[in-house]
Length: 365
Length: 229
Image 1 (cartoon, rainbow over the protein chains, first blue to last red):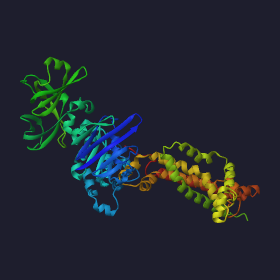
Image 2: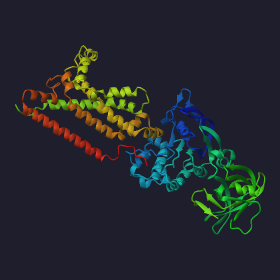
Image 3: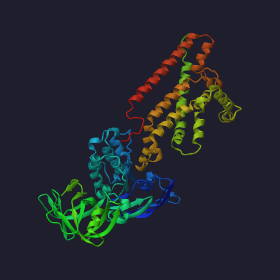
């Protein structure tokens, strides 16, 4: 596993970035934080494009930057997918793709091959076209392909989907998701979208005001209550990975400790691991087990933490047989039910969103 | 007599071509530097580079004469080096034309490089291209329009040069007697037929060159700007 050791500082006007971390890169690592937190700057420091940064950057034992040492970007073999694609307008898609392919000797040693990239990203129909005639999503696919074909050792992606609308995003997500597995390449992925983190990343580095405020596996970071100001609490939910232990008539049953979560999931097979997200707003709370109710999922839970969010809402962190859930209820309901930390309650799950590829977007229950 | 004399025509074309080639080599790095530097004295350099635009050719010619004359700082050095003088020679005219047409090369190139911006250059670097490779594979093809403009403007401007040539080169047939000088002399000696032939030739030629440029520009496969989205 490749390791990226950073000990860097950069000051620009009122913005200051100071990062001292060693990050083990495997699969997709998300660099996550609000805009202006320094995510893109950090990515540019890693690539060598940010020449004002001082400090040390070491990747996989190789010193890229240290006092008196600064390996220029073109010698780092770091792929960079920019927010805006940055395709070369004077070249066709095919020429853009092969831009970074070196001389023949290098080409023969290359691990990532043209045909594989074209197939993986569905680029065949675009090859003879010019960048100006491509849609935003197509441009980003070409940009990803172009970066891969330079055979980088590390791929940096800077909000590659931020300029795309929802449909284009949905179109390109599956391609990005497959990259680490298909090309065995670690990816550092900058985003300010919880959705993208939940769907793509295996671990996350949380950035705020130029500093790392948290890092770890995605599920763990997203439910840490002290990080909610950074991760955002209202539209975020809990990420759950669970194994299908029963599938019949379009409904699947997922094991959550001793309890079961019933979800509509056509074509699920027993034994598959599913990643799904349960939004806090979709979890209601009852102090007694409700009867005669359409909601299929009533889970026994314990309140772990309470976060008062403004005058109207309260957000609860729940423990369900060792798994975590979040619930957002009104302050009024909270007071009426007399809830408190340690209290046993029933969590009513109204719907879940599947984060795994090919399983559809969301399902009501 | 009264036949069209081609000597001054060839000399003018030779002078313009030499100036174009020399200026592309000289102006490219300077235009690049002006387009991308954050240096504080950039404005000073820009102003100096634009001076030939506003100075009367006679002023420019006067200072060039002083600099290039065998007693002048550059002229003396040149005489020591080559045993020939810069003033009243073709080489001296090329030097003078380079100065005279300097802004016509620097400004379109600088504008073209500024339009390209850093973004595609950074992209090329992350794809493993060295700065030189980036220049030849990305920047210069993207700045094609700027180059076409620079070539045409420098060429046409040098053809039309008169005052500076007169000051620095005089009128030595086959050496410094270019079309504009020849026309002037014909008019002075009331040889209107000859003046007409040369003037009309220059007029038609200039028009055709400009026409070609506009047609090429229009057919250019991609815009001058850097297309995003």
